[in-house]
Image 1: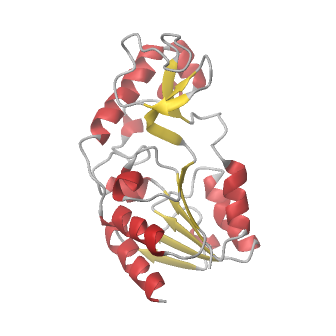
Image 2: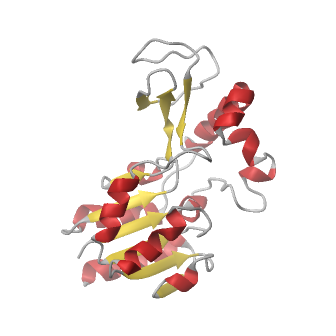
Length: 230
């Protein structure tokens, strides 16, 4: 059986990371167009870089939770095809041990050079005359984050995996952000069984064959035990 898993902010919120869409989340103090668009970066580079510097610092203060650990266990143990597609830019899946993983919205702990297009691990601040290790140009690094209006990463690979999936599982997603919100329909069209694990019904819950509601740190380990036992 081939499995595709989509994870969203709800799986990392239990580790203590602020989400963007919650009423008290990151966007409650910032307009999207001020921090998460190419135009914002061009207009006020210092504000955008500082915002993501703060997010990077916050990420270092949290740890993976049981949901991340359970998916890493499934990744290690599952003999068939498996792909974890995350909308999250944190590195908690990796730190839990997941390897069959794709960040469709980029990675907070990575830098993208606007001069040469190089991507490289990056954990420090980007405000202090940072230099690209590949081309040497200064002050052209930006967070390796897919901003609004930009194309998510590896869509061809994701669509191929969805087309071959027997099971599609969505964990902790709002169902409001496309193209990820449409993955369930693509998986169903390909004949996959679809399962939603979420704190509350998402905007697209009615597309799923089955929905289970509750904290990811409880639902995901229980589901992984179930799927490995089968």
